[in-house]
Length: 500
Image (spheres, rainbow, N blue to C red):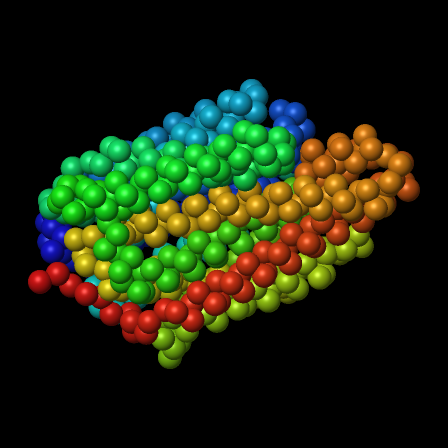
């Protein structure tokens, strides 16, 4: 059984501290989306640069979650949580002071490293600290924080960008992070002394494989899908194949591994992981494109954009409060949530138009938010229900890894759909303007705001609406795939297998 330092008491104070720490990470992951147009204008970023600003964070996050989850199991989860906060805060200061796109992307890498220490530790500590009905409530709160803060992040970002400038999207992390650091003194330490040592070969191969995959998906728009991009995909396949072989060999020899494949033998964990990746792929890619369209094409301010997207929060918080009271199996709640997300995304795609009003998307964003609240609140509970307590750290890390890998792939794939759609739509609406077409494509639509000619501006707005609608509909279709994955989830009933 996982060891806890001191008495095992189920106070809600640790959950509050962990929740605020998670809030800072989630807000930062979404707050940047509203700041993107201002960052692009200030630092001269291209569409590819913007994708890297978002994807590199998720990629660093995903690549290190599993090995750092293992490290936290061994050396102390609270300790890893606190170290991650320090790294994240230092990187936030670097991002706030960045004078170029390269420096900003570098700071986002370090932020991802810090986040990969914080997030799996929150789940692992919750899993070890709370039992019975309190665990169900704790996971519901944790899931609501993810959905709610993802929605409130754009609102906070819009206010900061509008009134203080985009750099405050990063400076705001400092006071929050320092308060959470003080709060960690009230979080019990937990560790698993049987977790073993580090798996350096497995860690390096997992990082190489995931990095190569996302690099190919993002840079394929710039270099085409042959040559270096084909080599990147080949490297990803080779590295990930080698990773599987190395991990299996080390497990047979009784040596420490980054990924314990025995976890994938647990149906609730295996199919829950597939659903989690699909959810993130659809969610994060869509939330990337909407702020760009609302600000650059429709002309809303950053604050107005944040306010519109924050309508997600109402639905998410409402759903989070309802989840513990629903007389439904956890897998059914997840399935309903994904179905609502898919319906909301498709409805948003159909509602996007050049004459979009400030309230047009709000009802569908609320529906989308309710879906996020249902799915996010219960999916971790479903995935970890049958995982032994001694494996909670690495299981939590893997759960978060598939989410972040899905986010990185979603940003890359839906970003490619946006850029390709903009190029085609601009060719249809303005066939004789190759330079303008290239500018809109390379800026992911941000250049639309700078077009002064009324006729050309109207045509560019129509093209942007067409491309944005396509992206959100594709995201909805992806989320429908997540509904399919939930059909394979067993009915755990929220149970959890304890160690003998």
